[in-house]
Amino acid sequence: MKPIIIRKTTKPTRHLTDHFKNFEKVQTVQQIFGNRTQNVLTNLPIEFTDTTIYMKVDYNGDLLINPHYLKTGESTHIYLDIIHELIHIKQVMNGKKLQPKTTIHRKTTRNRSIQTNSQRSQSPRP
Image (cartoon, rainbow, N blue to C red):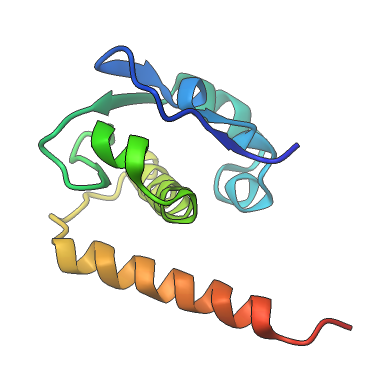
């Protein structure tokens, strides 16, 4: 099953699996959380807030998502952003203290991910 992003927000706080379906089956996500993938994703709260531009993990390990971005952002960007933020969730779970991120960090990360995926899709297949 392919991952599905539910874009309509109805409550300010939900769980990740309410809006990101089948992400527990994504190999990259499984590599991040291992055998705890299903449990982590099912119990991970997300908060919809206009105080962040795209999405981010705060100092407590809470995932904050801008509802407008979820509704109107490009699917590929949202997908790459959620994978990126899940890595930060894992860092917090492992006791790492997160540093404040700038908008430049987010755009640079997204641009690198898009370039990498673009290069992969243009590579000749065996």
